[in-house]
Image 1 (spheres, rainbow, N blue to C red):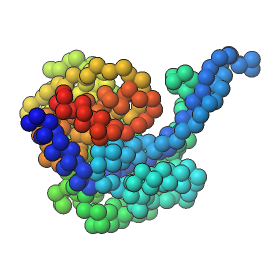
Image 2 (image 1 turned 90 degrees about the horizontal axis):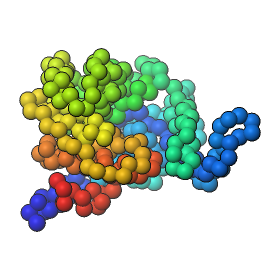
Image 3 (image 1 turned 45 degrees about the horizontal axis):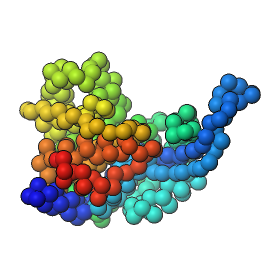
Image 4 (image 1 turned 45 degrees about the vertical axis):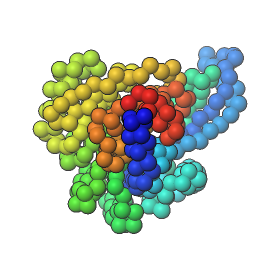
Length: 331
C-alpha cells in the first residue's frame, strides 16, 4: 500500500506539471485494409482499404504522451501553409495541446508520413517532407516564439524532440538549452545523428542504440554492457550532461548518471508495433524526473510505458490510468 501511495503521489505531481515541447512535428497517416490478391499489373499485393486514421507524430506524439500523463503542454514547431498543417493544428487543439506557438512556413511543406497496412502489418510508408535546415529568418522566428512561450507558460520541463527535419539547427539548440538553464528548467532531448553532440548541458539525453552507434561510429549490441559503459563515460566527458537513457528496443533500457549504470530489462509484451515507443519513453522519464522522482523510479516507469505502447498498432500515447495500474504492481 505504501508503494502504491508513492506512485499515486507521483502521478498527482505529473498532473500539475507544465511542459514545453520543441521539435519536429509530423502527421502520421494510416490506411488500413485487407490483402487478398496480387495486382495483375505488377507482382505487388493489393490493399482493399477499409479505414483511414490520422495522428500527430514526432514532437506531436511526445506532446500527446505528456498530456495523457496529465501535464499541461505547449508545442513549438514548424508547419506548412497547407492542409496537412491545418489538420495537425486541429488534431492537437482537439487533444488540449496549446498550439499558439506553432510557426507557419509559407515555403516548406508540413511533414507527413503515410503508412499502408494490410492485416495489421505495415507494407509501405510514403514520406512527404523537407529535411534541409531552416533559414536564418525562420530560426529567428522560432527563437522569438520560444522566448514568448517560456515567459507565458513558465514550464518546468522543456523537451526537445529531434527528427532531423531541419527545425533544430545548432543555433536553435544552443539558445533553447541556454535559455532553459538560465531559468532552472529541466531539459530533456531525444536526439538524432545530425545534432547528436550539440546537446551539451541537458539534464536528460535519450538516444537509442542505433543512434548511438551511428553517431559515434560504434558497433555495439545491447548485451555488451562493459563496452556500453565505456562509450557512455566518454560521451559524458565530451558532451557533459546529467543523465543518459539508452533504449535497447526488446533489450529494455540502460540508465547512466555519469557514475553508475543500471540495466532495466524489458517486460514481456505481445508486440504489435514499436512505432512511437521512444516518444513514450522520453515523455515519461523526462516528466517524472522534472517532477522530482528518483531517477530509478522515473526510468522504471518509462521502461514500462514503452513496452505498453508496443502492444498497440500505430503511434499512440500511453494512458495514465493504464500506466498507473501496472506501475503500482511492478515499479
